[in-house]
Image (cartoon, rainbow over the protein chains, first blue to last red):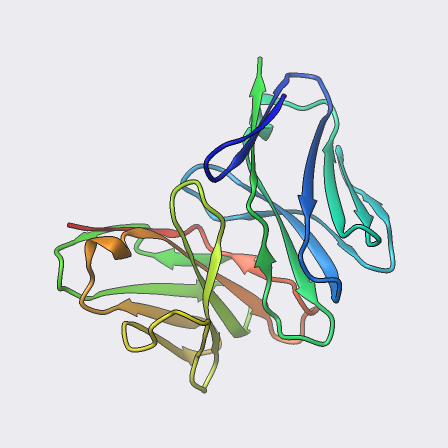
Length: 113
Length: 117
């Protein structure tokens, strides 16, 4: 299940299940969104991105959904594996703005064998 | 391709000393690099944007005289934490944008763990 800790929401799933990680982004002018995976003690690793002219994009075992109406982004991981255990961040970039990325709070995913 | 390295990966220093962290793009040129700070169980917070050959742009609340940034070449940016204090202990991460690349696309380094005693 999902819970919100002091700083970092957590999600625990069983190996083989599908995982859904959610993100509410802040700026309605943002038009580019990225999901990153961060393992303990490492830098963020690109997973998948989506631009605002799309509402769904699929990668290998991952799907990103974008709902601009409610400013919501989700990452779906199919057949979750123990190696998927990490913290997942969404990030947004604003059209016409700088190159800056604004990161969400992150969700810690734990996959139980 | 698009590999970013950081050096050192971990550093321990005494309070009051200065620490320099390097960020290198290994196989591409980066006109813009970014420096983030991440405290335990928190998200990445942008500290500053570093542009090659010009002064860095700092985010609100980040002291430019304490966190000195130099982007001397298209493959190297350095962050110097001056007169470090225990509250500066954190995970510092850099990222780089490929020159001429798509807006918003950044490649991240592995991070530098700083511990100030």
